[in-house]
Image (tube, rainbow, N blue to C red; front, side, top):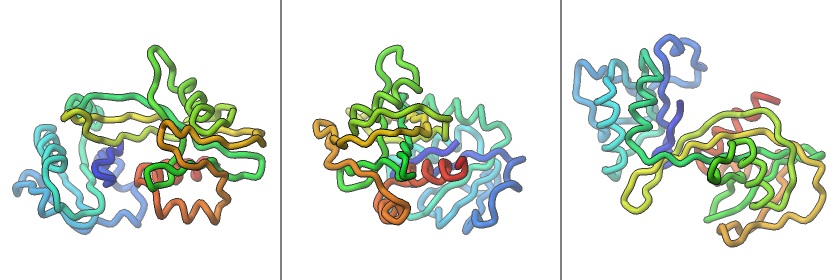
Length: 226
């Protein structure tokens, strides 16, 4: 499970999976929750925390929301029971469910949209009684005017934000999609989308420098499937 708070990844990792992590996931700081207080102000680079209780993790996340001027790249919480920690974390927030897609056309270009000064992928909230798969296809058509065929699930992302003084956790399931669509791309301007484009690999590299960490995570997972 990966949660994005202020565009920083907070990774919940099973202890037995720690040895399977790629070598580029080296830690700059390792903290043992049983030996010293956990202060978010002291986090640095890629910080790893071991032996933390669910209550300690809750306190850490609340502090990340409450305090500014905290500088670190990513946080890794190494746990024995990831399901237990996930349940605890979800209860901290108002949960919103959404779905989105990584859409590929016949030229192997990916559908991107530009909104609020950043490149993004089409996604949106589920309607009442709607399934994730149906929502993903619907959102692509509504936001970009593209009809696409649903493929396999890529991953699930979680990111947080504040709405009406409440902490919200947005759970988004992402799906790969294919399309033969060659019509006009029409951005859903009422949703703040300024433009929609098919981006080739070179242009995608540029877009990835101006997007959200959660979107880079989705693209990374997608490329492992193709």
